Image (cartoon, rainbow, N blue to C red):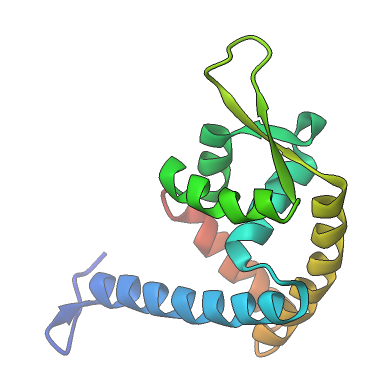
Length: 147
């Protein structure tokens, strides 16, 4: 790939900066929509979404962090208020008491279902400028990025 210069920056740097900025804007818009209606943000939604599909709707904090692309510390901070309002509960690992597990509650499952509908509507308005082919291409390109 040719190292194209745009305003003193390489094209690759501009791509990374644009991805970061657009990600922040999308995050803010989705957070606002979820928070206003359901009282949770996108991070909390992603936690609930990961637990809904997990075996026994339970994951270790480390596995949860890996699934949502956050640090274990960030997940711990996210989980504390979720636990207080009854969306998740803490369990101790059956094989190893040092392992902290997070389990989805019935309230968390209900909020996830309701929030999923809202999120789908918000995402649809975010992507309305794209054709189906462009949306598919965008997804393909994003999936090529390294983790």
